[in-house]
Image (cartoon, rainbow, N blue to C red; front, side, top):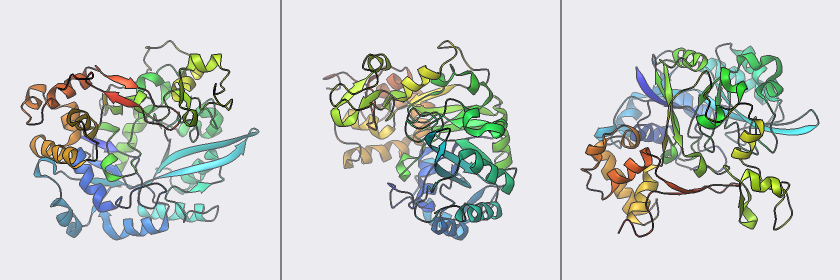
Length: 419
């Protein structure tokens, strides 16, 4: 079965997330986006775990679905063109902040478990170590390697995936507090790391020049902090719809079963380039090197972005694919495309009306952006929608890259061209 999976989301109990980020809205928006399997996120948080147990019931092996009575109510809010089954996989993100080899490390890791019993046992172990109640993404003074050991001891069918591995501040390979390799981080347990999440500010091709990533599957997820952000990155799988088949597919990276990913344009990510947001300074890695990594305005250290860090750790020529590589499509969120065409903000009523008009007519957003034939899109009542998506698919775009926490700005049309 071919389906789309977004395995990294959050709940309303995580810091800086929407209050509407509950299981019902995740169910609704997964369908609007075209997603079949979605992470629960945050199962370590006691209140969210209670909601998971209250509102979800077992479905296929290791997956869950909304209770029937909730499904009936929520399905009424989904356009008929988008309706499909949605399955939840038990997932959470954990922030580890700790000292190792004389340096403070800060990295985020995704954790997946096959059943509620394992989740409950894992939560109890973490609760004895640190505070899992104050944030949906708990912050623990726990070495990532030791976190992984606790997980495997709880269930050998659980797995851990390093999250957004290049983000400067909170990732395994980040420039500010990361390591220089998977092995440096996970030591003797490295052999059990079979996938990594590339993050919004990198795409698979940027990772192909790192030999160590030859042996892992490069996955992409939304890291959604609100329901409408689901699917801004996602994975395309062709396998049985159950936890263990998904795990096996991620572990093997078999291109017959792991079809590829849907990606942000990495330049639009918040940490693509080097820079200093407070000083409005954005620099390429070459320019940063000339400045010795210091801001030319205030003299403080620059935040070195993903592009810089990838180049630092590269040990293979650019363009040479990893042994385990998969195709990918780069996307611009439909709201942003409509915002440019209509010349109003992405959350404006005009854009929202056009957004739901498009999905009511054509189906889920990810299909509109990636697979719907161009001749069908050209029949849209929304002016220039077909032309905009054609340009996006052909990578005919103009980008002011993101840096130091500031999203990049991306355009499909030249000034005055829309008129």
